[in-house]
Each structure stands twice: as structure tokens, then as C-alpha cells.
Image (cartoon, rainbow, N blue to C red; front, side):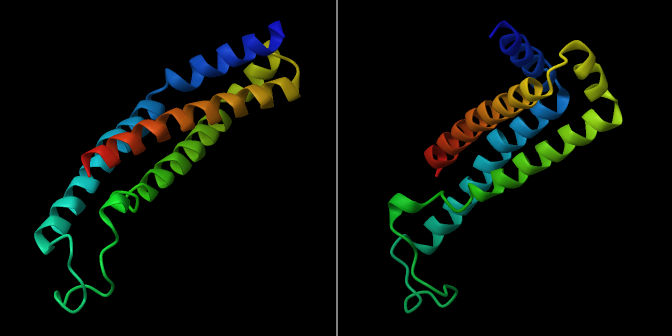
Length: 137
């Protein structure tokens, strides 16, 4: 168990203290809510009860007020996918995998540590961005 804890600490430090992680976090936690705000303002200008009969620019009626903000959340998925691609490319480009395997020589443990850190981190960022986006909307 001590090995797995060391592997998780190592991966946590490598991923969360990197510049890419904070750029993606900023995009998801700042830009996404701003897009939701722009959408909310435009929907408020149209009117919350607008239908295609009352407003010619609509193809379908607006969803109920409880569902506003959920369509912008998909923007965050693209940022998380880009984060995964950049993280994988940086590990390959800088030969960090070789260094990791020299320091922590159990491949399955390294894989599970990387997987758990990325899952926990992306879940944390997703919950924060979803909460901020829906609150702003």
C-alpha cells in the first residue's frame, strides 16, 4: 500500500503543479461560465416563455428554467480531452515515462495511480465548473 500511496503522490505533484492543468482549469472554471452568462443574457432578451410562434428566430420552444445552463457544460468536455492529449504528449516528449518507471518500477501500480489521479482531478474540476456554470445561469 505504501508503494501505491507514493505513486499517487508522485502523479499528483506532476499533474497538478504543471502549467497545463491550471490553464485547462482556468478555461473550464472561467470561460465556460462566461459563455453560460452570455447565453443566459440572450435567452433573457428573447423571453423565458418564448416559443416558435411568438419569436420567429426559434426552431423549438425554450426548455424549462430548471434546465438552463446544461447545454454549455459540454464545452468543458473538450477542455478535459485536450488536457488528456497534452498530458500524454508531454509525458512522451520529455521521456518522463522512463523516469517514472525507474523510480516506481511496477507498471500496473503506475497505471492505476495515473488513472486514479486523473479521474479524481477531472471529477473535481468538472464539479466546480458545473456548479459555477449553473449558478451563473
